[in-house]
Image (cartoon, rainbow, N blue to C red; front, side, top):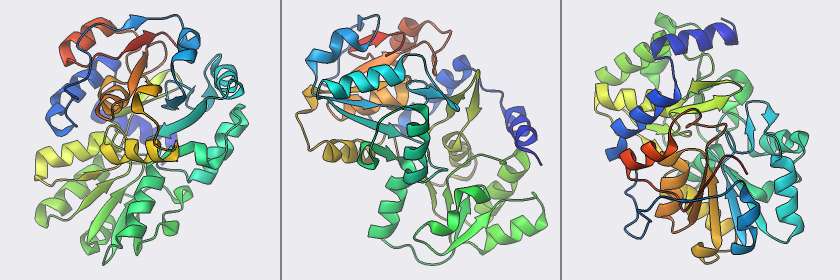
Length: 320
């Protein structure tokens, strides 16, 4: 099956649109971190870009997809803005829910885009998972849901690759596993999901999800991500996954530690998704900037989305 065919099959399960994605985040809201009681409940201050906010903060934490890039292209002005902040002596960090590629490969990708970053300036969900596995070794055989180029064999766990045809052989491989690590939805179809659901229903086991996102902007469309399929499994099997990445606390604790644990009031979290970037940043005590032109809320009335969710960023701009 080609990548385009697999994506088509995934989208046949639930064609993702920004409106649907927002509603789905609201549906699973009770599983997300609670909004900080100190978070603002007022509409955000609106800016044209990040330019007017630079002097107010010492450090900036950027989501990747929808803020710095969409798919395999940087967004207009993002490279310039990132460089401008660093030239001004600001600490800049990318906090991404990407989990297919390694930190090394992601750093190389952003350097190709033109971002002048060092490895310590990028924290991805795969790295968070790798750290957790190294600190608390998992026993037994773990199925890793990821394409071969993700190199699941490099994870610090006894791994069995879960990919290929959705057939009886795949079900047999799943049934052998003591738990599952969900890294990527590439080549993941409705049939694959049904087999995993059947395997977990017959014998519930741990599921750890490196990428909690429901969707991600890639080019001119949204793709379904591991978080969506994990929440489907929660609904249908009753299992309780462990999630890494935004909006969950470990991702933001890691970001603050990487920045040297500054006063969170002096850190601005910049993201395109209310339920991951903004909610997570608020829970960590950060100020937040929602960008709306290219990401999860593209084409929606952001103000109505804030009213409905009760998640209000400190600031709002079309892009950085």
